Length: 564
Image (tube, rainbow, N blue to C red; front, top):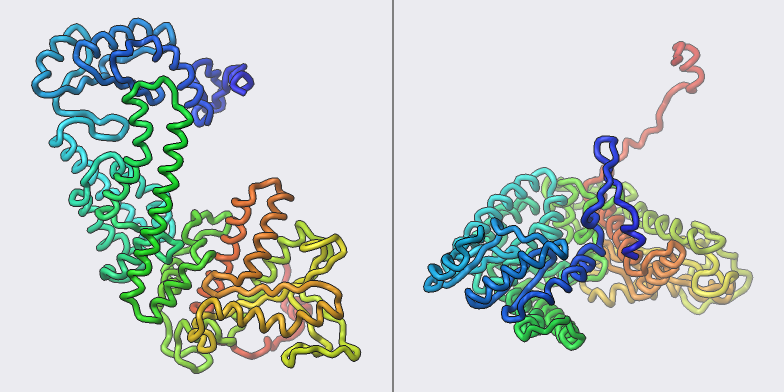
């Protein structure tokens, strides 16, 4: 593969001209790092074994006495050019203890190597005295604090983009330092202060959170949070996790093992699994502890936000091209829906005359918004089914009953009965037909809010089955799948199974991975439900109710001499 990639010089296109790159690897090539590492192994093995070496691409480091390091440096500068490695002495630093500083300076006097007893950054980490480490961290925290304030300014107009920038990239700036420097809690407190008093109020449109709300926001999104963890609290956990994962590799380096053994790799994989399990347990305990402080209504709201599928709109990057971007008002409304807050700028009364509340407007039929929400899910599902199934039909009619008796009293026996979607070749063979009927229910409605979330799904699934399943099985000789989703983004068990099957078939058809296809499908459903819920809050329900009274268009055009 490397021969095929670098058989000919790489073409670089600059201002309409083509420049051939005949040296080095192509930027962004995933094979560049492994190839470079393999190419440096012969050089590393030729260097003195008396020192402990650590290489990361072309960044070389060694640990030993002053004499051993001078011998290693001489060999590196002499042998390196033969392997295409040219050490730059002016960018090289020797870090030593205070009592060795004069001896080290004398030993490297005839080179341009810099010598210090204070410290220097190495691969993004402070290496040296405690005073240097403290100053290094303080400088970084000051820099990140100013950047976080700038990100907060951006959030005033683009809260969705600012939130995504923070969770997908900005937070990793100090998480890296947390993994390599211990006991940073007090030094990271300024970052938490800005998060709590500036950034979070900007993206939520609310005052700074109290302790309970701040703890909720720190939870991962799958537990109903926002993934905005407290850097002052998380740093010690990240350092211990990093230490346990890297411990086998550190021991291997100190033993000067020439290869990364399978035993070391297995030990690291086991440590990673243990860390992931510990984080899941800690998040679960944290969520349960928070629920002890909440009212029953707020506990239910957090449970709804914790459902699978309820947070896909938060974890997706806000790319407008894919329909995954929310404007500032929609993002704030989405957070209000997620946490049961009352959105700002809403009227006192709904257009139907009832008191305006989120609980009411998600179900109010005035304006047809619940029907639009239902039809969005129906149409998305039908469009995707056309990719993999035959004979896909929207709102197919059922055959009228001609004497058949249905067991359930609530079965739909009307002649005009119809369902939402039908198709062939989904669950079984090419000629096996499946009917779907969609229901998107409001979990905050009076008929649902006193039941557990699981019982709500079960109730709505059973209602659909009692209405249609026997008729479809006995009369249509087909199968029936109820599609039941919550307006907050969750879905019932049979719906979960259906969409997993749909994602699997689509992945096979499009030659994509199952996981990426399922994530994409969940994101589409999540944004559809979210936008429909926001429309229920912000949409104009009133209608003038008058037909347009006018003369025929052709008469108006003729008499008024309308023309282009």
